[in-house]
Image (cartoon, rainbow, N blue to C red; front, side, top):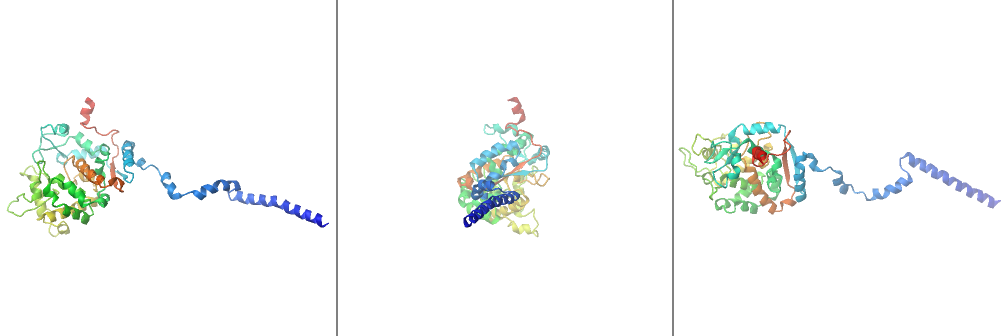
Length: 381
């Protein structure tokens, strides 16, 4: 009898197990998880690393740009993975901006002489009106279209015209400034002052140095009279220095009009003494130090603060809607300064630094950028 009872009890327990398994499976099924699902999921859940997976879940950053930008930018990203490229979407259409930029001839000037050196630039000269010096002429519409189209400057050197100058300031160095001034002793002696000016203004010192070299160095060597404090003003024998050509707007009615206006700005003629900016800019600029440091603050306050924080945006006033607030009139200046800047920063390890490039995108841009030589030459070829 005991044996039979034990067998019945065992059978009872054995019979209970399938019922228990079925109940558990029903509960798991209701919860949306089966035993077999769990066995398949467990290895994935155990080894999944969200931080490592995140880059692969993100979209290609180049998709933020129009297709005509992507190939060149993708190539740059391969060369410099630490760089960030941000599209700057503009409100005004390409045709409107080009119209506004070309309706006033003096806004975009090109240097030209009837020599072999300048021959490739002849297509960019609109007419023979001289706006500055002896050889600065207004640019053609095609010339402006070529230099204003960002797609023509997306290589490892000229892309530096889109570098946000505050992001570049992190790798600024005295050696970099000295390298910019190499071969111009009159500027080389001021390298420490320029480096300090950059730090005080939170601005890339090498860019300040390149701007000085661009604005006041002479082809035959040395620097212009404005950089030496040798531009005479009527009834005033004081030496006024202006290393960035700030306020040096051309005035064809006055002999050497641009230089005279630059000296007048350095004297403080265009800013009231009661204006806080007068002191902030260290006016009047009666010493090289005050001109260098005060000019750096002026550039930061009047350009970077208003979003014109790259060489390109300081040439073209694309943010205010007024099309007049531009630093330079020289059409080729952003490209020339970018090439110098790229050499300095790339040699300083710039490819491994988190530099930020803000690249304009216009509504209704032409499918292809303006070719070198203009439309006429492209059609002939």
